[in-house]
Length: 179
Image 1 (cartoon, rainbow, N blue to C red):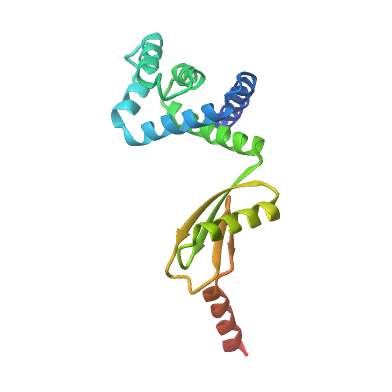
Image 2 (image 1 turned 90 degrees about the vertical axis):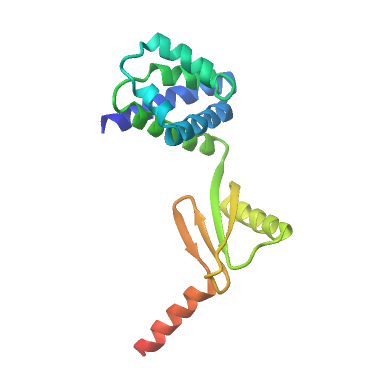
């Protein structure tokens, strides 16, 4: 539990500083870069967790490694973290930073699962419809799912809405079987 509290405090402080310097999007993008490196590069993860490398030397190395692809604030934050749970703490903080950035921009993530590929105009219509209904800027991803007979399945953040014909047919069938 303590890590979540610390992550929340770190995210709040990082976002406050990012807003002051006008770098909220850069901070969020930098967290994505480092999270991907941690997830995909075992040597980088081992470097971060190493107890043999002094923190000042680790900070210099991080600046050299990440200097062009990450914001300085994230590099310094990463250099200040230590301990065996530092990767977990960094990920939790990053998740909270991403949420705070999305909330400040009034953005929402939506994934639309459709039976057939949508044209660009259909995607634009769906996006504008969702934005008017949700009253938020929509980050829309469209995924084709040939298992759907028709309709659409929407994932809005962590909420699923199913408007597929297949789902409705199954409901009808179960209703008919019970009658």
